[in-house]
Image (cartoon, rainbow, N blue to C red):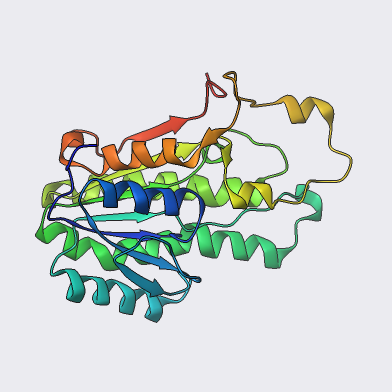
Length: 240
């Protein structure tokens, strides 16, 4: 394991489980001091923060606390997210708002607060979207809309902040073995043809969270200087 992050400070949201927790572990192993933001305790972090990414004031306070603690901010990873399945014609407005608020607005709020600090040290932001944000995905209209928004937001920020020396990249995982995925309630009586749509072609057809964290660690590092505006799909050829 290289020390690409020695002396650097990172903030990871959604850090208590899944891709977020794996990213905390990976960045720590590479020498970063990591602040972890979640609603519940995050394992392995140097600074444990509690905040709901939908709460503007809580996000502002968490970013400020990170900078006060670390003296700088070099990387932000926005891995906080929620998901659910529903047929579009039965999708409730409350659930639509919840998915967009956590996945898209939460990502925006964290990055908005972090960008001035990242610019000071020519840092990076890595967002976590989904394969569902770049291609049609079954029973996921609200989730796809929220993650597609994350992709578009990431590209827009990459362009806007490139002159300030800030890089913004996005990872779009396919199926990943996380508590979020395992906790999803299936849609009753799904169409078998749709269930086969977009499946990974590798064996096993589900990625490990650590594999996504490795890509995040690359995109956030100085080795990825030219990878701003990049949208990296990690999906086992499901979109090929």
